[in-house]
Length: 147
Length: 462
Image (cartoon, rainbow over all chains, first blue to last red; front, side, top):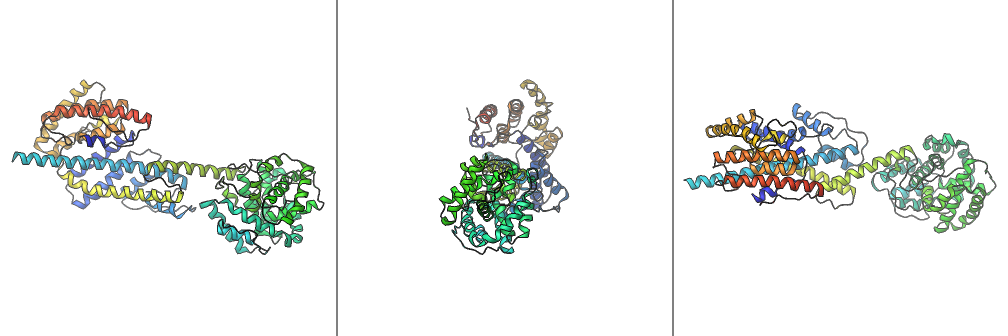
């Protein structure tokens, strides 16, 4: 329990509960479904991004892009900004959902937000996996003891 | 302005006294434009100006004669004060079009604009006035002024006055063209004494800037990118004491709306980069390019982690133990059930918990669905505590503490077999205690963390 407790999310942010809430809800829904494995993989990944996007502030462009993409299941053609600061910015633009149609300043803003949410999402999922693993291990132990 | 172009392209390779043909080629000009852009974007290394200075000053002698007509054109094109607000490009272009020095003057004007914006903060008008003057032109102007072009009455002359003085002063310090400088300096001083404009003080304070201003031909848009690094001003070649007010922008400030906007933009980008630096690990890079690389790698890494976790998560989820949490209180805002009173939460939770326990004994799926219908979801205690500690504020945490602890307690009592985050399942009270303490401690920690910026705070177990 100590290790688990210590593994706290480093970002004291009120939006974490919302993110966790959305993700867990969709996760449980996915787990209850009986889809094949890889489809569930993808569904979980989509749920992760959807939870990230839903808990984002409404003025974040990337969240809209993510939700749009998830909804339509395709990449929307975005106009590439004419001004290109450096080629590195282009790589960042490609990484960020909806990052093609932003200027550099806004791109960096969105990146900050995106990175924060990605981090919390990763930590969230990590926590779940670890706790589930521990639960499974304990479950096995208990069953072994019973048997 | 071949040498200046080459120098621009070399991005700082010092090319002192590079002799070049006085006739600039269009390709050179375009190349210089490109290099200017590169300068603006990447490096903003202002020491390029130094070689420019030398090169331009060395060019003066052979081109002296043909510059007079150009000089006249320049002066004719330079409008009165109010008109100076128009784009310096137009000024430079119009002035340069007629002469064979169009590219060079453009370059020079751009460079000077660039330098001037980083120089003294002066009137916006003055800055635009200085634009069309290149180092060569200034030399010519100075010479012609020395040669008897007294335009003291012209307000523009006051601008040019500091120019020659600074040029002279700076020129004395530089290596180039000492012979040329000596007449200029005397003429400049004479002019300076004659006019004594206020801007002269500024120029005297920062002759360096002016040197750079003259020699460097940076595009006007690159104002924001002008680094505060010292740019050596072009040597010697005292500017002609043309009646033009030289207003040099202070270093780091701009006197033109375009450059101000550019500067603001650059500052904002720098802020964001700093914020990103804190977020991303291995952020000890000072270079913006490498920082961007780090950011890109980190984003890719996080996305990959999400993907991997989603795959592994499935394996664990299939055999998942019940997840316990009170989402309503976690949701924060409109918490119907999550009353601050633990007793109320107790009562409201116990019924649900009983129901859930019953359902769980039958089938996990139905239990989960029941909970979901109620707006709850299950999660391990550790996860709940982690989330609450990470994100709690005062009221939310208390809610979670009350309901979460009660839920855990009851459920643990009902289903002792549930592994509680690694703890021994046989002691539900202990787990409850730990959860409560964890939550409480976490909240306190969180509060202290938010106040003290302690990012790595961990919950301590009593």
